[in-house]
Amino acid sequence: MSHQDHMTLETIVRGALGGVSRRGMVVADADFTELEGGAFSAFVAALAPYYINASNDRQSTIHELVSRYSHLSGTKVGGEVASQMARDLRSFFDTQGIELNKL
Image (tube, rainbow, N blue to C red; front, side, top):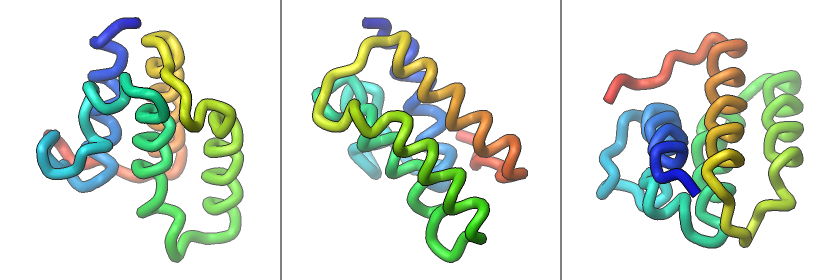
């Protein structure tokens, strides 16, 4: 398990949640994403603000993303999976034209 991969996921989650600090929201912390269920929780948390009041198309896209990783709920993920989750989040935000907050 690579902590650096989890840090990449953390950075995207923090940016998606408005640039919160690691201490400001527990799911936006690489140490948390390395725990059982942590990566999936962080992934969902990063998408949640963009689901509320979204178009049907965006909600459908988010639903597909969450469904892709729902089997990881409650499980500990390795660095490679965390890295893929980060890439999928980044791709979602890029294709949706959503600019993440700079950290």
